[in-house]
Image (tube, rainbow, N blue to C red):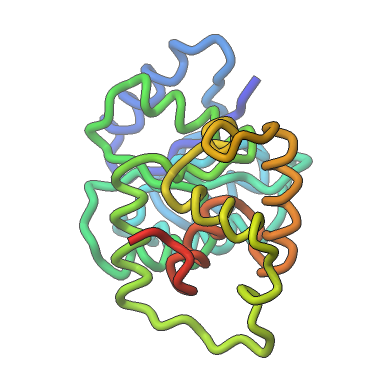
Length: 221
């Protein structure tokens, strides 16, 4: 069962998301919060697998809460919760800050119910939500606005040709299976190469790897 916590200052939004998510047999909403500080406290107490986080709330924004939840460990759970930012898609520093703070994906508040359920499942499985248009637009704008830090070692140069190609395909929004089909290799081969690439460049998940690709010139376009 996927344990979810909802964070939004509007009770009607939380109620709507709870209703939608609990239509799925494998999802359970274990907690709700109306501001960031309460979200951090409840995340530590309940240990959700996924936190659906609004980034702009009175009484404590979701940016600081995202950073604390991602950095603070599991609390009552066994793994660190993944944070799904639920946004109206204002391209502002709140959204970019959430990306820097470790958010695992983004989705629009007016998304279809199936998209929300799928996003929660994907983050619970450890996959960043990188194949949604909103995420690509956020990453592109984020990379444009923020110059990458100068690395001590050129990590991109350490990637093999195959690893670099897989990172490029990942930045296009392709899944492991789609990358495998594109490159005519096994899915397990894609996973192996991607894992080594992430270790070399120092990224912790797929979404962060896509951000790195945009910042270091490996993203298409």
